Amino acid sequence: MATQTDTRVYQGEEKIIVAIDLGTTHTAVSFVHAYPGSDLDVRMVTRWKGQPEAAGDSKIPTLVTYEQGGMIACGAEAREYIGDEAYEVSRWFKLHLHPDSMKISDRPPAYDSDGNTSPSMEIPPLPSNVTLTKVYSDFMRYVFSGFRTFFQETTPNGVAIWDRLSSSIVIVLTIPNGWDTRQQGFLKQAAREADIVQSEEDADLRIDFVTEGEASVHYVLGKVNHRTWLKKGTMFAVTDAGGSTVDSTLYVCKALEPKLELEEVCASECVQAGGVFVDRAARALLTEKLANSRFGDSGSISDMVEKFEQRTKRVFDGSQESNVIEFGGRRDNDREYGIVQGKITLKESEVCTAFDGVIIRSTESCLKLLAGRKVKHLLLVGGFGESPYLRLRLKKEFELQGTEVVTVEEPSKKAAAEGAVMWYTKQTVSGRIARFTIGAEISVRFNPANPEHLKRRDQAFIKPSGDTSLRYGFQTIVEK
Image 1 (cartoon, rainbow, N blue to C red):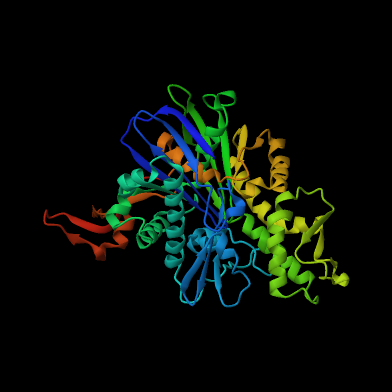
Image 2: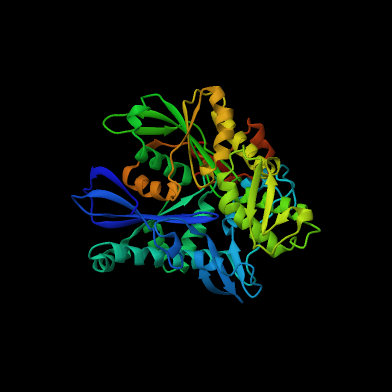
């Protein structure tokens, strides 16, 4: 069972803290039963309905299957319906929540592109007559139910503990660095519809949000001995390369004693890039390559992309001249198009093409964050961060600048999920950079010597005090 122990003895009131990292392609859940006088033992949920073959794997597919608008299955079970025209499988639905700022400035390649251009933003459509809120609430209900079952079955006296504490469970949701209060409000609404919380007030009281970047830095610091490489003034970056976003945050160590203290150096970076866009570029490549083959139909291409994602993408490091995708049986042959006994071989250059657009965007984002700064370490986490080819390309780019690229995540885990619980209990980051300027609308005294006031003098009004004022002033509370 996957665990992470916080060496501090817990002194607060008894509670259950659960963190849900709902990713574009995979989701994971971590939790801790915090009990006064005990160590904090962070655990991952490693058993899920319909996924017995992956016992011990904390990741589950972020998939929901519908039939005529009704939810049929989630997670691994939902995967069984892919390709069946009687059902609609919702995937990558997290992309629908990305704010416009991400969709415009960091557009992924279109489905029919070569992966290196970005003319439009394309997202897999939602199932017919199904809202995004329903997809999220259905999946969150499934995830929370799986967590409840795992907790009750693997915790001594688990049922009684759950009955006693379930109404006060603290829920930590991870979000990309580029999300804001609009996405947070949406997730709270989905949690209410999933009956995870009972009201708007209950959601405000029990649901916390942490960026994937900050959760990841807590995971990293919990996995490595920071005293061997961190000292006061050390600057380092954490890059969480996930399914649909690459989140990078730059930190500086402010203190080691009496406890580790970090501050953000600048606003974090979040670009819409990640593993799903490599898959999409691979689909475009295979569709064009097999346009006139009898295996060029959508079903066969989907089978190939699935096998590409499961193996080819995960082991490719840029050195394999031949990359075999096993998608069919011995009788599946079309030698003219390189298909022999259910296998198709892609050249090194073809696989590189699927990766290149995403890697370019990821590298540019990291370069922007590190520009002009002496950064000693770049810590790489996340599902896409496990890619040997991504690691190779980042090492080539940054080690020339004196920045060491280190991978610390275990393949069966999601760093953000485990790190989110650690974030809630440790709060290592003491200073953050605001992504927006926050303030309040105010009225200001009219100044006839101010040219801007003169332009709006027709909007002036008299206060009860007798002062002439203008509306729509802005008073900064927190400056970006």
